Amino acid sequence: MDKKRSLMVMSVILILAMALIAFVALSPADSDVSSEVTVSAAASLTESFTEVERKFEDTHPDIDIILNLAGSGTLRMQIEAGAPIDVFASASQKHMDLLVSEDLIYADTRHDFAENSLVMIVPRSSENTIRSLEDLTDGSITKIAIGDPEIAPVGRYTKGALEAASLWDDVSEKLIYAESVKQVLVYVESGEVDAGFVYMTDAIVSDMDKIDVVAQIPVSTSISYPIAVVSSSDELEASREFIDYVISNEGKDIFIKYGFTVMDDN
Image (cartoon, rainbow, N blue to C red; front, side, top):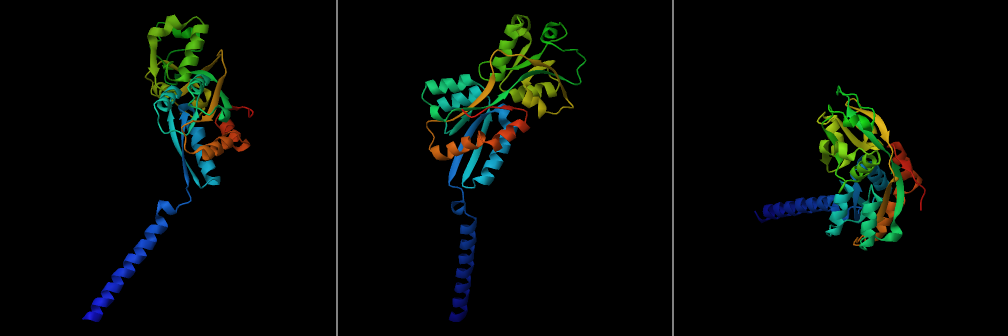
């Protein structure tokens, strides 16, 4: 009986030992990841940065990139509020400049890496004939989606274009504000509005069966994207490595693929 009990105890110990070995083998503590880098990126970078994340991690298995995607103004305010962000990629120089002035960015890590263009889109199912900014003043046009100029750079560029064309006052009561360029795209794709303003890159990756790009809109300032390390980051070295990849030739190829114009390292 004692011998049987001993065998049973040995069997239990063996099973527990094997389970422990399996747990240790699968435990994240034993993984190759040694750094987690949270990257806050403008919504218009969603597709390109998703691919950047995947390819960067393929060549840097010790670094885990966590993407936080939203309007640049919203992301800036998160950083100002103390959110644990390591890298900020903005669709506007304005929001990056504000963080630099508040000493919340390492200025020496800042690089401009891509440029975009502004376009006007309409639902493909629409019966309205919109081909220019002036067409938006027609009485049949009642809803126009733009990004909120206070938080979404695409909205600020749109407002500037409409003001330059002396049309802002004429269309202001028709405007539907969105939190990000992606929300503008949804409004147009769903036919909830007569027209909307997005970046060319967002139009390219959208459902082209649902929208038409009717005009490229001139802007007074370049739509350029800066990236930098947040000064509160605990992952300075890994964050710098990520930025180095973004501005590398391989990174540039990704941005070109999604319709951006790439910029020389500076």
